[in-house]
Figure (cartoon, rainbow, N blue to C red):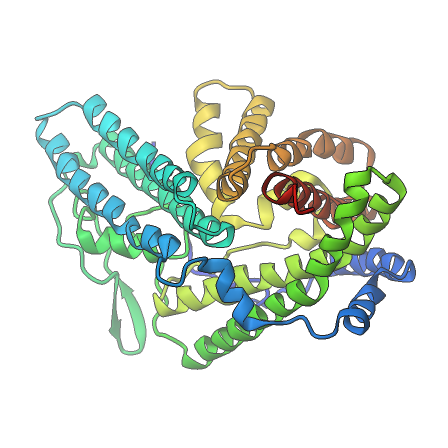
Length: 435
């Protein structure tokens, strides 16, 4: 078995250099959104502005991260992540011992399993215990630790594959830059196992915009300063836009939705849900561009990381499975490489393997929501698992534009349902008496 290469030199689809031009799914989105607009939901923004005035407050955003100005538990937790990287670097010592046969492969796997388990349990336990940590700061810290968990899992798995295919006896090399400029071009310096087992290599992987490790990443020949400045400007502008839309548009709508949910007034609940669908969906789209195009391309350009395929044409999705396989490529590649294909090689049925992938995704969705909110309602878990029958229904009964429209409707309606459920339960638990 050969260790598969999952990264190649390529541009993001929304970059002008990619040459991509198929945006037909956007037309279906426009039609659906126009129907929602005709129902008057979009004018909610104007009514909020006229009724409440300007609600955008940058100072209030700071309070979402810091409840106590003299205590920064979320920031300290994130900084402490370096200790887990040091532990994994310590495990490099054991990887080298594997080469000499001093300890068994099973012992090494137990050590890695313990390290990976602590990477998830430690921040979760700290968040549940520290009362001064805000939900926003907690979810960001927990997301960073989750990314570290996936990266370390991939790092260990890939190096194990290298040992299994007979590269254990390869000559040790010193890891250097994976490129060296020569006459304006990039000359790749390929590294063999175990020459990749260095501090420099693992730290590059930790900060690289990918979850899948490989010994030789594709590298761009230079840092394009104009490209970098454009991405930085987009990041700053879109972040301000996201904060403003949430404060001015979403927060008043959510607050006005609490009473109908408490009184179980279904007609008003549906009305509030539709009013929340428009701002929530627009904010989600802006967040997608901010994170997957602007931010990840910014980091990739700084690190000269050549593979810019962070997403594919998910807007053209005619099935639910196509959407989940193409809107978040780093996670999809990780699931395919380290979860789905290993199960198939062990003889697991393809359908059961797909359900198992959705189960794993549902766990992490619930993990990233319930722990920061300090409540367990399983709305995110059930929402992800509901994608399984929805995917079967859409692929069986809807085709072409109808399937694409069904995917868009599930995105527009499904997310605000989960948002309202969690916000309602959070306020009932933490502010029930005052409400």
